[in-house]
Image: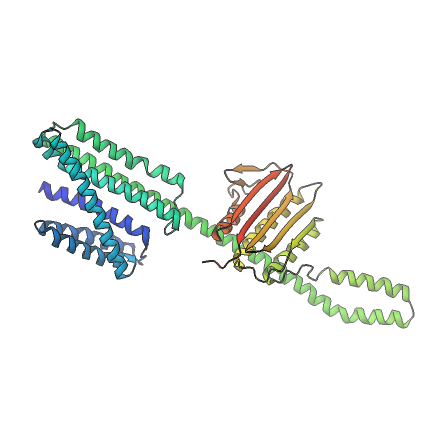
Length: 438
């Protein structure tokens, strides 16, 4: 009975390693009911256990059966084709066999070096468990490598991996110490040590999935924040555009009366009054027409709206732009970028008694899009790592959400950015490849 219990523990550890291995190269299915994923994974463990028990005397048949069972269940658990599932199943089974063989060589080496075979016989299970723990660490490192290089799964930062990896490495060290220092222990003691070591391995698995679930929730929260901010920016922009259109409609209705009045002044030969009246209505009408034309409808709407807002605050805008007809940044993303950058700049500049200037550069240069904004500020900025926290007393919990979302958009397009503060001047610049988002 004990041997079946130990075999089950080995299989459960292998299955978690197998699941992690698949998560590197493909995406898990999201069933409507989470219990389905748990049930399928439990059936996989049970199926593998039955194969190991009943095919223990036929090594080749057992390996083939295990690979096919893995392939079938992974088709149910992951978004993957049959041939890819089969290939990954063969790869992982080969990795598993290599690990088992290497630790069998270690065991054989210990026997050759004079350690009692009877003592090692009781330690075989601990050595096999050490191999499984080592495989777990290897798969975790492999997971980090591929996620870091190809972004195939949830992005786990180096800081997160510093929290994850030490515990598995410590577990390997503890199991190794148990094998070495308790080499002459009795069978009962060895079984107790096996349970302790197994518990450590399972704690590693639980720790990884707990941290991963936390990261998933954080990602969802960030996406919700981004969506709310994007919606707020779009609503604000469309509201401003709508307001300006209403004003223009009213001005259009007034136009006929103005023409009539102007004609009457000319008819009465009141040329001085007519000239003065013409200058007045020309200035008023010009206030409500677009001053900026980049050949991009969305960019025009944002820049002209923000330009009018800045003029109302007596802020000088300095623009540098070229033809943006071929801009490849998606509309929703350019709204997030420009609206947040210019909103932050206007808000900071309104608090300045002098240097009420905002400079904006928006150009396509070769294969890159250059976006840069600079403005002056009165309050001291609070730096938080590679970004800045808000100085708004009414929103202490929203630590630089706008700026973080700007940075997220730049990274989304594989661009680079720089943030500097020099003599109370805040400067943000970014270079984004002007290519369609893949």
